[in-house]
Amino acid sequence: MIWPRPARTARVWGEPEAMVHRSRCISISVLLLCGLFVPGRAAAQAWFQTGTGLGVEKPRVAVADFAARADTAKSHSQLFTQVVRDDLQFSGILDLVSPSFYPTQVPTVPSELRNPDWTTPQINANLVAFGNLTESAAEVGISGWLYDVRSPSTQAVVGKVYRGTPSDAQVRKFAHQFADEIISRLSGGLPGIASTQIAFVSSRTGTKEIWVMDYDGANQHPLTSLHTISLTPRWSPDASRIAFTCFVPGASGVISPQICMYSVDANKVVSFARFRGSNSAPAWSPDGSQIMFSSSMLGNPELFVSDTNGGRPKRVTYSTAASTSPTWNPKTGQSVVFVSDRGGIPKLYMMNADGTNTTELDLPDKGYLIDPAWTPNGQMVAFSWRRPDGNFDIYVMDPATRQIIQITRDSGKNERPSSAPDARHIVIESTRNGERQIWTMLADGTQAHELTMSGHNESPNWSPK
Image 1 (cartoon, helix red, strand yellow):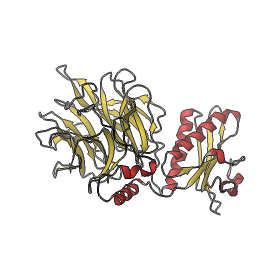
Image 2 (cartoon, helix red, strand yellow; image 1 turned 90 degrees about the vertical axis):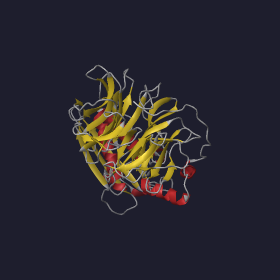
Image 3 (cartoon, helix red, strand yellow; image 1 turned 30 degrees about the horizontal axis):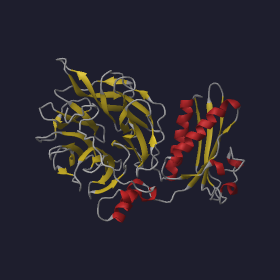
Image 4 (cartoon, helix red, strand yellow; image 1 turned 45 degrees about the horizontal axis):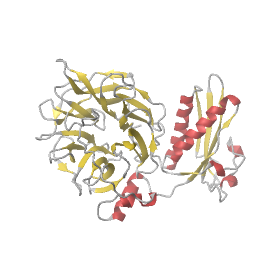
């Protein structure tokens, strides 16, 4: 491994412990302006808001309590209502009207909806979601609607019926699906993320294993039980597999990092070729046909490309220094951003996918630049940057113009960013509450939520769907 952290095997880059306090932005309203370090601040702010879908006028949405048609359905109706509200609140595209303002009588079917009740100055809603639940020992049935209470139309914007096993997990799944349907309609067809998952590394069972959880932190459970060290999980584009780094004994008994592969469909670790030396930091090509990873199989840690079984590895970088942490542009598939210390300290570089035309993504203050991750639109790269006068924080950059915006500030060490498929959210690892945990937030750094609270958790990666 290169640049080891003696106290942490989870990372390969050196990390000085000294930190210098910087001034905090006074309020959320000036967060974006505080984070700019390039000329033309107004233009950069507009670029960022356009790229993430933020900064636009948001509709006001109310979610009435879903009615339980029987006492047996009460707990699930409450669960469904709360999950839908939480999903919409965190979507970043709407304002959720507080339930404390809702009228006493709320609709459970379309014929009970009274538009004037929801357009009063106090509520001022644009849309209202409502519905009901029925439940038996064998099945739960959920009917949900979304109506535009400002429109004279009697047609529902969304109308769905869900039927399935009467379990908490199934009700949560239906709630996520309903919220995603609403978000898709209100965002012009862009996907919601309520049904996505986050893979991460946790040591809560004693060794570092690959875990997975729902996007909101629910349903956390381990995928692997290798009883060794597992790192850097990366979802395949179709979310059917997770490539990761694992430490395994070789033929001579020496333990070394290798690329491992977990099949979500088969629910087990499947074979991937083993190579000499250290092999780590896998990344998928956008079409899912290739894996790029860092390997010292020929002596120096360089980037190699292979098929998804590890076959036919081909070297793509040539340097006297180390190269690692590749990330493929998900839209074009033609460019790769990676980390190398060929300039003395770890920095970001961009190259063509075949290794040609390598250029440094130079930034004004220098310092350590690690953990690159493209946003789903292929236009921006999120990364961790320890500037000379500060701590590791998350930044977003447009590689074409070098415009930069700071996402986190003065809240512990913030590393390993991964974008959600909607490009409006990111997940990171952070020590802002002391322990290293997984956090999600909107792409501008607001609405931060801690997802893990037990054990040591790191290296999150958001599923593509």
